[in-house]
Image (cartoon, rainbow, N blue to C red; front, side):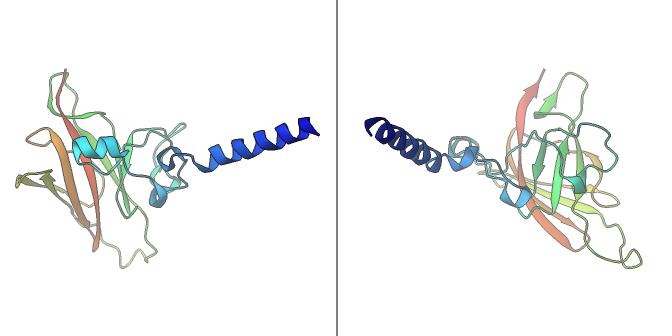
Length: 176
């Protein structure tokens, strides 16, 4: 009887430990459930968007072949994803690379006759400042080079084809 009591006590303790798991480490089921950056990162950078490193969602992997694990950031609403071809993004790049970002919009159910590509307008504000820049991606979400004038956390307001979303991107000071 003593042995069963120890087994039962061990099982209860194991289950209690599982129930107390940190929600930031619990796997997410999709972009809407993607957790924000851990509190320690938010406190130091002000950034809420987290760079994911897993596979792109099915709706965003068109044109990719094989493994689609790439650094990417989901918009807060989950309507757009920024696929980062260079990570980390940097204000100054001395290695010849660029801050290439592929913007992929979640498809909407609309007939092709009513759909017309629109410019993706990115209004970026440096966290904690009044510094604001605007970038445009002609033709709507697609490939772009997005450079920022200073390092830090940039809050992006994204507008395209009557849709909106937001995200934060961190630009490092320098990439050697």
